Length: 269
Length: 269
Image 1 (tube, rainbow over the protein chains, first blue to last red):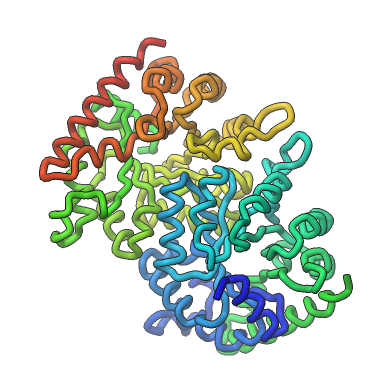
Image 2 (cartoon, rainbow over the protein chains, first blue to last red; image 1 turned 60 degrees about the vertical axis):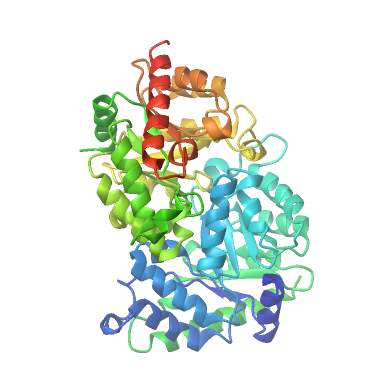
């Protein structure tokens, strides 16, 4: 089953466009978990058990696991294995020359067994191709991001801004129908234009909540004509909704609230 | 001691601008090493023992270690520890929003204990700043790369191409005097312009040898006015010079030849 099939299936089964970002931070998890054998996995497992029927995907960002060395990366592997039928987008933003990109793709898809990943387009086609060659896997290319620094380079251009040129290229590279874009929630009208340009391609949308993106405009502009193919990510405001014993239940409530809010705007057009 | 001091010191001590890329590939190392306890480290150690007095730095690319999972990353850590007094540029090309970039910087500088790294500028200043904050560490920002895909995006621009805008920004971000650029060896005149623009900032130059960059024009255009601050990388043509028992000695000969060739052009201006 391809990533896109898996995503559509989970999205339909759970009636959800919500993606939960599993961005681990041991200083923010309930401190009693630190006494457990594998605190990172224990935390993720508790969150997943309460939310797996509320999401279309999970998105662990590998940076937060790398920061804990091999211990963190082992917990990441365990987490991805545990997710099995729910799609996992391993957010890694890799990008390097061809044969190096192939090594990164091997790490992400063969070692960590993610269903999809994010990549950085700065080095061009041969830095993205080795990921696209995994036809069953999803490849979300950074396009227009939601952080303050987006304006340093992504708007540069002559006839069109860099981010639009990225979108145009990704559309051309998409021979395996496994590409997507990363477009932040903070620029609704650009998001709308990009959706209209890429048709049914999945768009991963970070930046609602903590980064200030508005849910209504984000959802209306991000979905395709059938109200699908937007993967709306929220990380910290869900997984750290509480740091007490009830943390997983609090995450469930926050996830359900956001999922329902997203759905309330999904078919408004 | 800062990265720049360490680089200058090694460069002076060994009279060298040569950087050796430790890009491990178990299918290319002498196969008798596979019977050893830690083949990756054994290979790297043999190469390092024969070449450490010929280089200004080593540059392992983390992709090739990640592809072997935690086993590879353990060997990487051992390799970096073993290098101690020779500067290590851990080529990782990371780039993500601020607090995620901080986690990557922690992994690279605190977990793997590299002296310097490479970063991707696509997401702008806040994605690079957490690396720059490690004032003793070096941060090489991707500018103009040597792979075929460089032309997809790096030349885009109105008044100046994207790569020039990156160089301009990096110069502004360089408050800790610890930034550098990555500029491929394949475009000599752009390399010359960039050197003249950034003054004494270190420039990491991949792309000679396997990727086709000419040594003479690369060296003449990459060095500063004193013939320094260029870090000329070669990976496969040195470390895989032979795959027989004499592999380390062959690497030494290849390294010495390239080091001497580089020096023959270094002060020609």
